[in-house]
Picture (cartoon, rainbow, N blue to C red):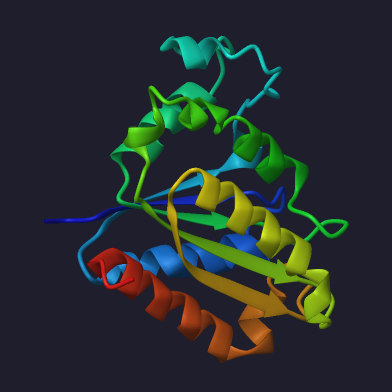
Amino acid sequence: MQKRILGVVGSPRKNGNTDILVSRVLAGASSVGALIKLIRLGDLDITECDGCHVCWQGEHCAKKDDMEELYREIIQSDGIVLGTPVYWYGPTALMKGFIDRLVFFNSPLHRGLIRGKSLMVVIPFEETDMNTVKPVIDFFDRCFTFLEMKLVEKLVVPGVSRKGEVVTKSEKWLREAFESGQKLGSGLT
C-alpha cells in the first residue's frame, strides 16, 4: 500500500535550512513511491489554543482557521516529518503553536486517529554544542510519546545558520535526510 507522508516546516524562512532538509526527506519518501505533501506553517493562519476543550466533547475545534485542514492531513498521513530550527533553546513559535493545537488528538475521542503513526523530526541549528538542541528533542519526545505516536527518527544538524547553508556545508546531511525519507516512505522505520 502506498504510504502518505506529510512534511510540516515550522521555520518562517522559506528555502532555508529547515525547508531544504524537510523537502529532502520528502524527496526520499517520494523516490520509494510514497505520496508526499509539504506544509509551511508560515503560510497558514493558525491561532493559539485557548484550552476551551470543545474538541474533548467530540466537536471540531472552536478555532476556524487553517488547522482544520491540517487535522485532516495528519489523519490521512501514515508518517509525519516535523522540521524546526532551534530558537532560544526551543522550537519556533510557529511549531509550538501547531503542537499546542494537537490537543485535539489528546482527546480520548480523537487519540485513535493518530495512535501509532510514525513521526520524524528535523532540527537544524546554529550552534555546534549538542546541549543546545536537547530541550527541543526532549519537547518532541514528551509530546509524541504522550500522544502514542512513534518518534522513529531525529535528524539533528548542527552548525548551520545562514539561509540555505546546509546545501554547501555538507552533502552528508542532505544524503541522510533523503535516506531517512526513503525509510519512512517505505515503512521501514
